[in-house]
Image (cartoon, one colour):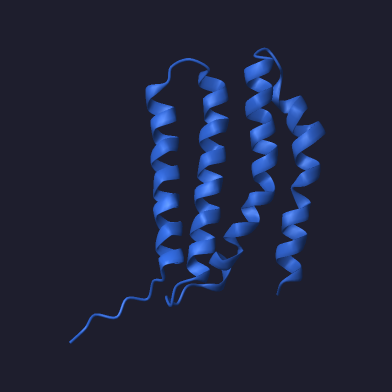
Length: 120
């Protein structure tokens, strides 16, 4: 009796990419003592990308998943802001993150939330 797998090649590749991103984010946090503050944002960026890949991979599987998990790809809207914070901390190590968050990141947060609410 053959085993029926509910994954396509695309779904399996998405899960493998997500696993690599999670592993790389852990390696960045553990093994790199320089730029510790900036590396937290790089790790967060990689985790956001991993969760987006999981969301995309779930679209290509036959698994029954809760409806909220299909909104994981909307986390990609936050990735640009986190990447900006990472680059800002690398280029200007003494910059203040709360000022950056209020001025640049918080205005971008409602857009994914509005999109998620409009999909229901």
